[in-house]
Structure formats: C-alpha cells, structure tokens
Length: 243
Image (tube, rainbow, N blue to C red; front, side, top):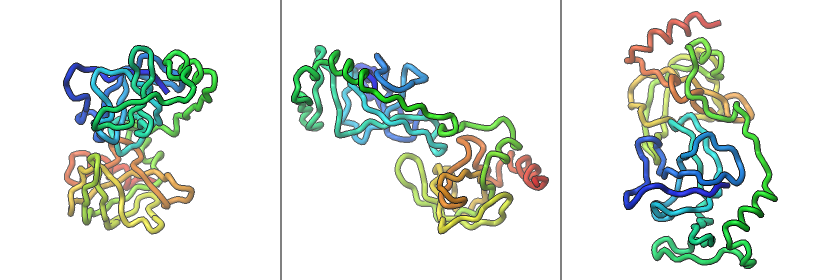
C-alpha cells in the first residue's frame, strides 16, 4: 500500500513503450507497507478512466513480475480507487461521471492521516524472495542453460495475438536439448515477436508443481532465439556440447 500521485498536467499518463500492459506512472509520496525499489513505479489499471492525471491516490497494489513482460509492474484493485483531496479520502464509484463518496462508515478513517496511521499499525509485511522475481538476463549461455528447466527447438504454428503484446503460440517440438516433456501443454504464452512458421530455441522454466505442467520463459532477454538470428549458432554450439 502507498500514497502516490499520477504526474503530469493534462496529458495522458499511459506509458505504452515502457510496458506492454496498460499502465500509468505513479510517483510514490509515502510507502505505507511493502518495499519499493524506485520512487516511480508502473501501475496497471483495468480502465484508463479510473485515474486522473496529477491527482493523489491511496494505492492498494499487488506486484507482478513475469518474464513475458519487459519490467515489473503493480496491479491496482479497480474496486477500490481512493483519491486524496484536502486530506480527505474519497472512493470512486462511477468513473464515467467521476462520482466519489466517503468509503468508511467511521468518518475518522476518511482522513488520510488517520487511515495511513491505522494501516501502518495493522500491516503485515510480506518479503518477496529473489527467486520469485523475474530475471532479466543471464551473464552467459552456460548460466542460462543451467538455470532453464527446458530447452527446446520449436517450429511456431498458429500465433494468436492476445492483450498486452502477448500471443498464444501453437508449436511443434523439433528437438529437445533439456527436458521438454510437457503435460497437455500444446500452446505457450509468449511475447508477440513470434512469427508463424519460424523456428526458435526456447529456454523455459517450470512454474507448476510438476515438471512440464506449466512453463514460462526462463529470462526476459535471451530465452527466445530465432533460427535466423546471429545468436543462434552461438547458442547451438553450447547446446550440442551440453551434458
């Protein structure tokens, strides 16, 4: 939870180049609970009309860290948009009409200072381990090869675009270099750089309880290698000597 504002003055706060999902930049004024590595974070919002540019809000966030996306971001619960005005907390109930009401029956907690004081007294810190954070890239191919649970070469079949610059990719496995035994997993959710008919090396990590049950990219960079790319031969050299 934090108190922060959407910077800007009349311009849309969206930042589509930095993050594939619909997001706004939020300047942190006060971190009530949780650890934030940066003073400015990216917050995913379900609807562009939920937040107003230049306004201050109380954010209730969950962190999202996935290798399919280029950076970590946070998700705001759309049912609980709290705007701050003159030290008062107001809840958005109609985004079209911009209608707000006081959210709490006990009016004491409709004061920003009192609400934050209460939240700090009752907060439960959750420490996220490093292993739960998406990894940007490995220092070398050997390290990536050791980290990945599955290394396969595929031919992309049907590529179905979905939201947020992702695609559902049907595929045929041409070769298994490591792992590659999937349980009823006939498609993969990947960044939409995949082209139908092209051949790729994929480095994947298990996310399910069983090996091959559910997988994701091992890292944000270097886990998708097109056969036509300059890096392909270098990666293949390591794979052919892997034991």
